[in-house]
Length: 165
Image (cartoon, rainbow, N blue to C red; front, side, top):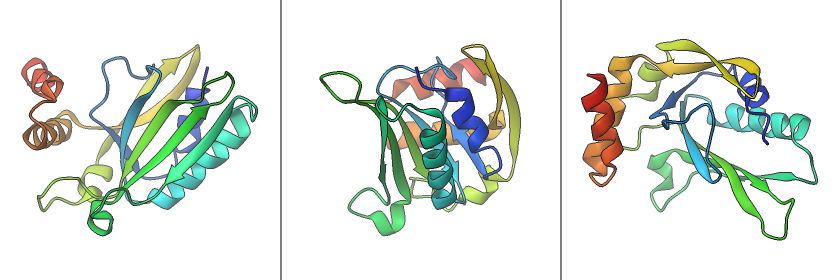
């Protein structure tokens, strides 16, 4: 099991917000991803790397970093930090952090406006407490509406909007 609380504690001082939370968060499903909007992607990547090295067993987990994903990488600002389980016969992504330093939508909204205004949320996973940075509900609603507009097949964002607004 990944030391999720320690990983989030390691990135606490870096500007970020967790976007579009999965329903089971702070727990996670194997292979799931966490979408994080940040104004300091390289610092966040470095902090995740250090946390992985400090808190994850080296013979169980390794990390894979990919910067500037996609064919339009100059504009996309999308990075992956994968924690890969190598303990068995088959390797698999245990958890992926999708890091964005730009919103992945064709709209003139800066990451800074979402990252600068966050609410600290106290969380607990596996008996360990930590704080995570979340957008306020109005900002989360904007992010989910944009995601649903861009990807109408992601109906869970529409459901979130119906349940929370």
